[in-house]
Image 1 (tube, one colour):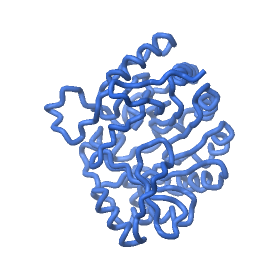
Image 2 (cartoon, rainbow, N blue to C red):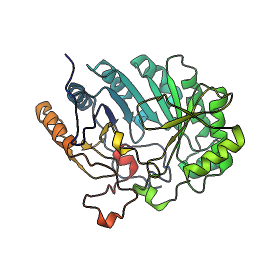
Image 3 (tube, helix red, strand yellow):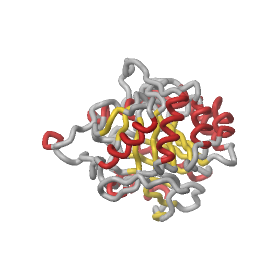
Image 4 (cartoon, rainbow, N blue to C red):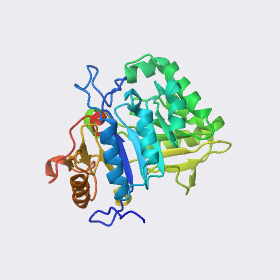
Length: 325
């Protein structure tokens, strides 16, 4: 029997869960976590992940993204991937990571059934990597990326968040990764959440112009490569594709299909809005009722471009690492 359809008041079907299994992280990226850290770490236990996945799978969730914080610092991350893959109705399980621990954990994740991995990487320059992440771990991240690419079953993407201070040369070097490797490079527009409110993102149009000037015309690709809202392009003689996720300049909320659970058990229906409910994680029936009612109240759109002082809803003011980006 097919699961019910989890639908909001605007007719959008929710079939994609972003599950933050911890809000702890082993890096301190300047747009995500303060240098001193973000305080006590929340971790979802394997048992609570089981209840969440069982209930949401029964409500129509088909795709799960394991996030954080940094999910690979969770001691049971491979077990959670295996659990998600074995949950009825869930057929696609992916993970977003900073890549620092990926080389050592990739085999376990693949054996557990992971379908795809996104590696967050903003530069290939060692000094600028340190400036962005406050860590000297670029070689380890590149080893993790190499390990992921060596798999014949794992789809691989690189996620980059350009800021106005990002050297174009760095972004072009990341673009070039898709030329000779079977991976997709996605440029994600900086969102005004958490520490991102204090920085200026790079205009996606400026980056597209630089890429076109350097590598040739960007040809739109109609196919989607994953569960998210990226718009993809091909480049001449490139094995992989280039994607752009422009939530601020090009709002895509009308086709939103995602819900979120944070590491402290909060159910979010919109990344930007502090709109949701604490989940009763020890009562599956109550959990299902809570999710159904919260989805009905999902906002029509984020308000990145609006004056927040006029916002009748409460905008999200927590750090990006606390809400599972």
